[in-house]
Image (cartoon, rainbow, N blue to C red; front, side, top):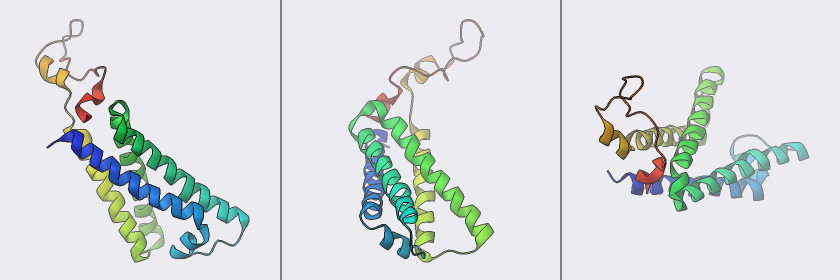
Length: 160
């Protein structure tokens, strides 16, 4: 597995997906609401769609692009996309139990969010800290405990 390449693909796809959704919500909040089964009818509801479905999605897309372009924030960007999608998936799961089965489009979003969360977790898990391999088996001088869990500067280097 080429973790750096996989992280770039993951972030690139996230940037595209979140970016498209964000632009659609900014430019056409009414059509986004109607596609989800509600018709925003007030200035406040249009503003809420533009902010939450538009601005927030665009902000996530921008961070994914920054992570795609800058190795130093790649790990953070992967973790952020994974966490956001995990939160969305949990909210949809609660809604499924509390409210019943949503539309096919919402189920598709849920599947995508679960997949994105699992993929992000797999990327995070496959990330290897080169210093951990060097010091495996070494003992911390003061505690006698294995020292391989200590974070190292430049931990995103293996995401390059």
